[in-house]
Amino acid sequence: MIKNITIDEFLPLKNVIPLADVRTPAEFEQGHIPDAYNLPLFSNEERVVVGTTYKQIGREEAILLGFDLTGPKWSGFIKRALEIAPEKKIGVHCWRGGMRSGAMAWALNLYGFEVYLIEGGYKSFRRWVLNQFEKTYQLWMVGGMTGSGKTKLLHALNEKGEQVIDLEDLAQHQGSSYGTMNKMVQPTQEQFENNFADQLRLLDSQRRIWVEDESLTIGKIFIPNPFWHQMKEAVLINIQVGLEQRINALAQEYGELDKDFLVECTERIHKRLGPLQTKQAVTAIRENRMADFVRLVLVYYDKTYTSGLAKRKPEKLFTFDFTDNEMAINADKILTFTQTLPIMVQA
Image (cartoon, rainbow, N blue to C red; front, top):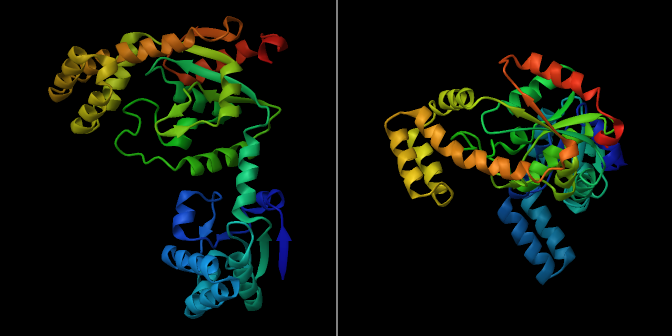
């Protein structure tokens, strides 16, 4: 059985019905529906040849070439589909719900699969993704200078039952020049948006959603403009932590990183740090004086954060001094405070 299904109808099912993306590996790598499996009908090179044939000779010749190229592969496609979906229920899509997904759906149906064919393919999913960022959300922001423990606070709020979006986790970057921590690999912009929208789908847009205060870019990733503008208009809980406490936390974290990586990242912001501070910071790294290194670069990052904070609407900015290292206690304090705010401030 082949059942045509819209992307809105399929997304709630994708945790129980595996999804096969029959586009090429290159297309899949650029961006795919979260949790989908790549079951490419054509290799990257084969798709180019078929596409060229379609444009230069015609549709029928391209179809014949497609059958020539895939002929020996069909048993392999079915075996792989059985690995993906042993219960023989599977979703299938290509770029726009055309011949590639149609051919795969036909073969799998012939073998006995129950096939859910995504109408409009991946293109319809991308329209759905971009639409998620246009929706209105009840955003609350967590801000603070570098090393304040904002991400830990988000996790503590989440453990209290609050809805949270961790943008830095989605972007695989902690936001500064050192953001990859020499281990994280950022997704493509397209995949970031796909993963982001899929997380938003699971949240209640009528309930509060906590997000860390970020600039428009996180590493090489851009936060979608409609969502970012909502972030800028949201209530901001600004947490303040003592300088020495922040330095100690960051020195411990950065002290575990490769020194060459730290030097490279520091030199990348030399124009902002200035030549003298850059030289001093690099020397501190080489001499394993992590606290001195952190103290030097925080001058720049603290100044940048303070400048951004000044642009916030005063009536939506609330500052908390965190003297307790226990984030669960800090989360409780913030949640208690939120109950005292008038609705007009939250809106």
